[in-house]
Image 1 (cartoon, rainbow, N blue to C red):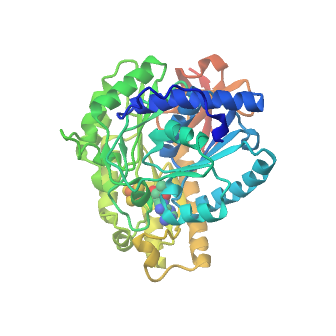
Image 2 (image 1 turned 90 degrees about the vertical axis):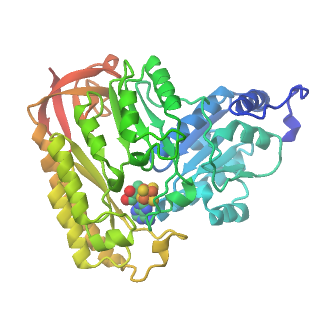
Image 3 (image 1 turned 60 degrees about the horizontal axis):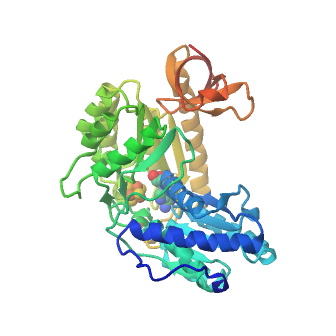
Length: 480
Ligand code: 5AD
Ligand code: SF4
């Protein structure tokens, strides 16, 4: 592609500091995109496909911000886009398989449209064996980068435009956090905000600490500044993001607790709602419970992954709490905040899980009575301690347990959700209803959805809604 080199004066110095360096590359990439436009006869388009968690969703907004800045327009269908980026997840094996499957399909499209570029980033790229496989069998991929250098996207695109080869840039880890780069929000009224990156917990089944690196907290001032800007731009709800938000601030020069950070954020005028995820039960402090209880803005919802109800399995998982400690924590939370909604993650079939261990998981589910639970079948991740543990549970046993758990979780969830019938609650309107355009869909503080008659101009507003009827996992209502 180096035949398209634009006429940029190279006498100017490339900045060495960030984010200035990236703004320099944004300008440079713009020229290449313009040249590409002249070559293909239309404004080049992109399609960013996001797999996995909220962290990845937020990272994708950063990618989209850069792509728009350098002159690409968004295209919904990946097969029609001139630049397709897969922001990948590797937390479970099936996420990886999906990426390989879709790449195979894209290859066929690219054969017909050779100028198409394909980029891969995210957690999967941090696994050396994945990159080896791509280098060997997926030569048509143009650009591969990881989780630590996503801020370099404009620079990497420029490198690709200037080269004929696959560009690969993966860092093992980083202590760097680059602030103040463009990003494009999916919703104008709500936004994710990273407060920390990485994870130090090394739960024995989990690949995240290996692909997202060590825990790094953002400077609280930078976080508050970002939220103030978002609010000035129309955002009323933020979701603070981190693998383990409860250990926020421990590695800052001036250490600060997550509860203290929340209190700072609460002061931001115009901000209406604060959410956060994920909380590790071992680090959830009484201070945080107290702050949540007294807050007007923090939503009454806690995602508190339990993973298993068996103390024995929790120990093997390196979760560092027992069944009793978890139940005690839940008790303290529910006593302080009776209307709290609790959700969780559960893994079924961790190595060595006996019928008795599984019964403990069923028991904890019945005792806590979660509003909802994400249930996962244990997936062996190469490189994690659990992958080489003995007594991997046979597939048929795991599936049978999984089905039993899911039935219980859903039964309880329907019961728990229905207790709000007849109440009037504040709702942030998010969209026009997919199936019936006389209705809008809003989210309550506890994260439940309610559909009620309304117009599109309500989107982004917080309104009072009467909850007329519970329909299992959502409500039908009317404006109060
Ligand atoms: N197998 C199954 N589920 C996993 N999770 C993390 N690693 C694995 C794995 N190897 C689940 C955990 C975590 C959620 C994000 O994904 O429940 O909380
Ligand atoms: Fe994975 Fe455990 Fe870290 Fe969560 S806390 S990202 S499950 S290692």
